[in-house]
Image (cartoon, rainbow, N blue to C red; front, top):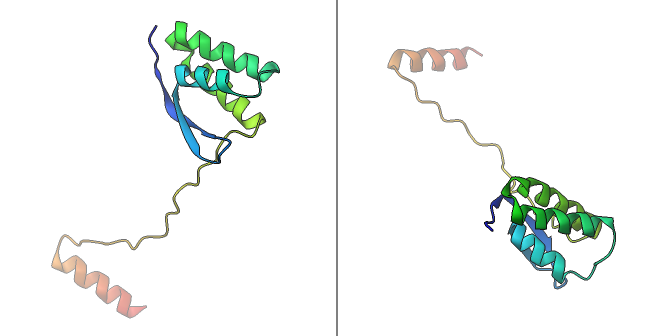
Length: 110
């Protein structure tokens, strides 16, 4: 059996509020087996998808989706904050002195 990593990890918030990342179906399978919520169709579906991905790497995306659905439904899914990107100043480099003069004359005229 080979495990193919997920395209992007699934971030899980643990009981102690720390965030762990699950990178493959094997890690997802281990998480589900150690999880306190061992009942319900979402658990069974996610566990089956992870197990299936261990046998057939083509099912890796199904395992990731099942794990996300289970984690979201039970409050384990950690929403990581995306870094804030502020507006940047655009630096323009003119190819010729004539273009630079034309631009400065245009700005002065406004």
